[in-house]
Amino acid sequence: MRSSFRLIRIFGIDIKIHVTFFLFLLFFYAMMGPKGIALILGIFLCVTIHELCHSLAALHFGIKVKKITLLPIGGVASMSEIPKNPFQELVISLAGPASNILILMIFYYPLRAFLGENNFIYPLMAITGRARFTGQFSIIAYVYWLNLVLAVFNLLPAFPMDGGRVVRALLSYRMGHRKATKVAVKLGHIFALIFAYIGIVHGHIFLLIIAVFVYTSASSEALQVDVSEAIKDHFVKDVLGRGYQALRPDDPLGKVLELMLHTHQEDYPVMKDSLMVGFVTKRAFIEGLHTRGKEAVVSGIMRTDIPAINVNTALHEVRDLMQKYNTRSMPVEKKGIIAGVVTIEDIDRVYVTDKERM
Ligand SMILES: [Zn+2]
Image (tube, rainbow, N blue to C red):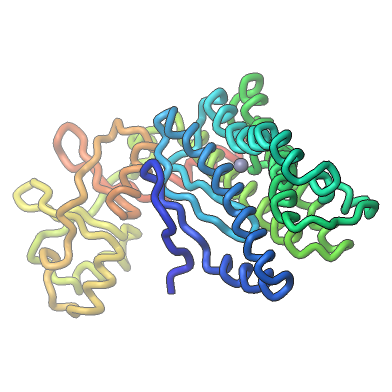
């Protein structure tokens, strides 16, 4: 089952809605009737505007935005990359909360006049338990003030929330991307623990969900930055092992299996008259062995779409290429001659040794 559905497409960005949203809608309908539906739709409209503004800022800097997914706890804009340039990250992060502040400013006087002073500020007074609400447009006031909550909450320095990204961008100017991320992630973890504590003590389930989300996404982004930075100055030739085995197009899969057991190589260039005609990945081999059996030949299962990369290619480029060709390994060439195979594990090893050095 699909977990989210496309609602509309704006500026080439798919706005998707997560299925849990419908449960949310039902829940609020049961609690508050039609007003509950209006409240949720209002909230989602504001969240969408917030995410759309992040996305427009990203598009302005040439960063592609694939989709915006609306979840019950807020929205997520999926960008093709996280901006490494601090200024871009600063602008993109601030654009979301800025849209909510803009909504607050634009509608302040019109709504106050329309709803009347008391009804307008009712949601604020309700927190302190002083005012009583009488008007029938309560939902509008609630949705209006929700923008204040969205702006303030998102600006908390709880990385990877907007405020946390602002902190990282500002720190990046002084200490570089990697260190700044480390500090921001620590802040994110501290805030996640505070959210979790408040969530548990006061029984706010949403705060608890947000706590888990902030904690795990801060960690995963830290790892991503660590790996990228670690491999930044390394090239294929730095990790390429000495010697390699190659196959011939008419080799049976049984021979490949034997080769795999005796050498530790799992992916093989397929050569014909010293020219590479294909590449056998471990995955293609296992699939081939399963569906065709040991007698089948290499030429039937080899991939011909994976090009050989040069020994002087930077490792981060190799990682991108592996993603593009959906493979965990690639053949390597040096001066036009096949020189070996590089795997994702070889790249990961650079990260591990780099970490040990730090
Ligand atoms: Zn945001």
